[in-house]
Length: 456
Ligand code: SF4
Image 1 (cartoon, protein in one colour):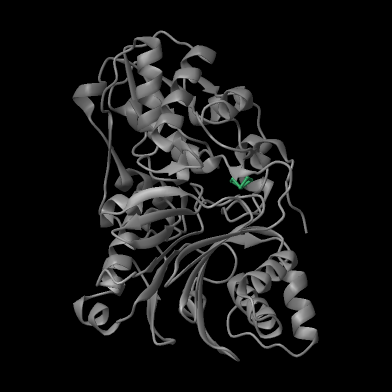
Image 2: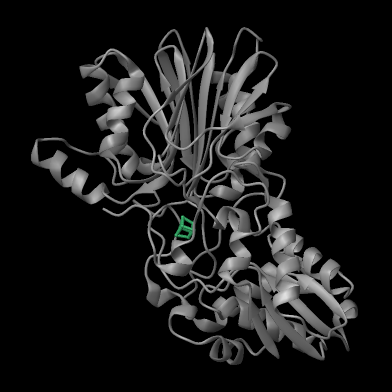
């Protein structure tokens, strides 16, 4: 693990007699959400309560073609892009998951992680449940089915489902005649509502709305169940804690900069983080550059606040596709060199401020610093637009244990030495918490503090 990885992205659409090409709109929306997961993807659509679906391993562009999209006809559609943190990376765990239950067919697409998945699986196995996959989403759909059979009202059934789940979840469900969106009571993962003509759409991030020509309406609130049916949009609010806990890393790194989450612009949050970093960790230098793409907004903020010119210094290779775990250190170093290259004439002879969003193991950072020095940089001053990541994430981000994190083992000075930089400065946690300007509600900061909002 060299970078943090998001778990998934979800999307849903209900055609309100606008005559939309539902599967193609989901397909384009998944393109916009591809940064949230590149291992597998899928689309499920329904007409007359029959659901057809297609899913496979690979990128959206690899899994779908015209013929497949043409076979997915329906008025309601949901889609999913996946990066696996819970459950194996295989087609059985690809989503949407489609099932038959007593009331007909339903499908689910889920972003997040359940912290009580093991206990739920154990309890359900003890009472005879069998599972075809090992991801927690299969647990969710079985619990939904149980409550739908026992309660005619789907909102009550989903509320009861939510009472059994602990952790993070933003999900879209295709129920007979309905599209439903659910966000966990802490609002850890994002989910928002958009509108395309008269039709409503749901998405992990608002960047998918601009892709398909939809307008942003609002965020789904923590603990809210949104139902879209032929009568329009309905909201049902379940009980929530006093303070929400939206993942602050969505602003730092995961989300696309053109998205708005819980009232705050992702680009603006990163830009403000860069400005604060320049105040907290000033340095004399000639050029500010960012590690593309997620640190570019912060680099711009650092430059504006410090008055040091901003420029391009690193180029990202966009055509790598999936990368594989390399068996030796020299091959791992090579993967970083394939991913990034240096603009030598922009760097040579200059004192560089290099912005990045986080340091995980430190190996990628060390290689990038070395590449800049090899290209003739006089000095490289590393600035990180988040606080040191010291604790694992149990809410859908791929940080399995503290031992994988360099900041949990070494001091800032030791990390600076290890990456070979001339100086290193992290944004303070206080500075981070103030950056998503306009955010409604609280933020999760557990990977910096070890204080978790939901535990098993
Ligand atoms: S622990 Fe960190 S990465 Fe995980 S949800 Fe909280 S802020 Fe996000």
